[in-house]
Image (cartoon, rainbow, N blue to C red; front, side, top):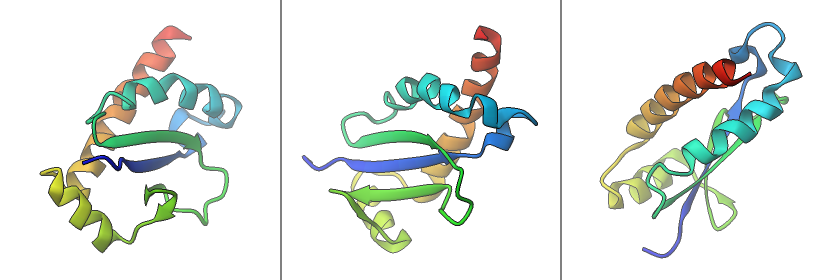
Length: 105
């Protein structure tokens, strides 16, 4: 498989506490390398702040095109995973990264 699936994770500033908007960009820069190691042969992770609540928290793209959940499920099935597993990975890694971010700062 040569095409990597891009998983765009928009991080809510509020998940970093009441002043999260002050350092959500630093957090994303901190967490991106951690996420980049998850299934790195097939997935490209991008964590960005979620300033616009009308945008989905998680968006899957292939070659710059947004995939529907159905399309994403088909692609992820080729990787022996699913959207629910990816969502679980995101939740677990975000929680760990938040703790480590606050320990380091």
